[in-house]
Length: 556
Image 1: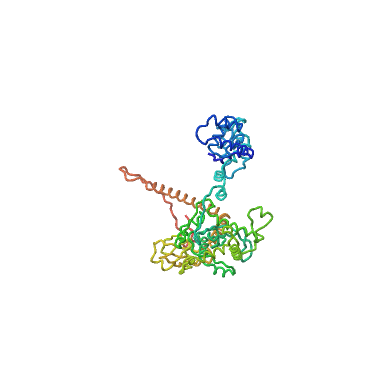
Image 2: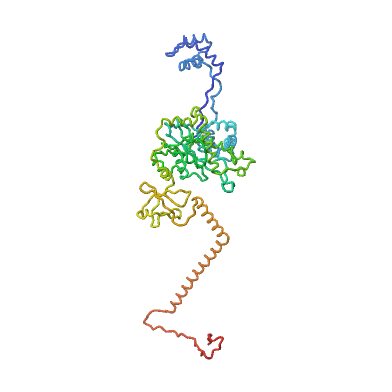
């Protein structure tokens, strides 16, 4: 069933309201609000207003229901807005075809859908076969399509992000104070970066941002070329929890960035890394409630969505900016214009975060996020526990896997890791955390502590994505070798081996049949005639009679 917008009521004109204002004193003085309407009252009103008895009775009913002057104003003439004189079978067919033709993904234009519906309704060989006079015009069909409610159009023909703006969302998602609520999300930056060695075009990086809702401050961030994952979510959360001074010193950036601290709730979308068991366990172990919003609608994360839009918009000033769509890149090669490396982009991003913190924010009533943070921190307890182990914290937010300890240690992706501590735990299942930036070690969580497990064997000190990329390259090289004649040769060898097996079976069967014929029959009362076996006579030549060159040969 199609949901339609409520019909608009006709609005009385100024002349009609003036007429009602003239009649109002008369009705107020002569017409009682309850009791029977007598003939004397009707005659008195008719004498002063000049209205007929029928008009007076109709106006009295409206006046008693709502004793104001506007109730006596003449109603606009014509049919009610939104009403249609369409036969019920035709209306049902129009609603059905509207759902099939217009309420789809992606939806056609209203004019195109109306033309399609009109043709299907009057087609002689179609399902409905209505007469042309019974079917409304295409313009009427366009108006009927326009009457469909926005929520139904959104549910039927829009994605989750676009649909959110067309559906009702009462209420608000409130923060109860400083570091009570933090929202996190990821986006791909609208700029292409270059590598740090050859300064050649590389890729667009991913940015993870965390906003503290009470002060609208950017509590943490993380930049990487890799797609959002448990590892990168953990890096971003750790960045939000810890002070930024070591990071600023490492990058050589001189800005004020005092935002950090232990927050209570982490609000994120329904992405797989946010729902991962290891990520949730790490959050809960540090007193953070991983509040994952429902699948689909984006209005729950409005603060972080607006912040990402603000930060991405600033990237249009950078060399290599890709813009928001293809039209903005018309005649512009973003890859050729790219000039910034990942560390340079991180430094630029830190400057933009500082600019954002020192600018007025409408959500704060014109205050700056840095100002709101300073005010809120002045009466707040310590932002982090005094005995916080930073190394332990960062390892908690690494991706985790369950592995059973074998005699050779723990295996991850064909690599083995060992520590003498594992000797007593062979056969037990333990939790191991791995940092995808290196293959040299993993961390086993044993008795609440992290034990370093070095890799067994000689592996290069590279990241796991680089290692997997090299493995894929080798697999592609192997596939190319197979395609370049090796696969055909393998097929020939398989056929030859199969033929050899078939010949062996045939020779074995023939030999068995020959042995059966040689063995003949078993013991019986009648004697079996033994056949005579003729043997070829062999003539030996004395060795003294053989010539020197062919003495090994024998002759009959």
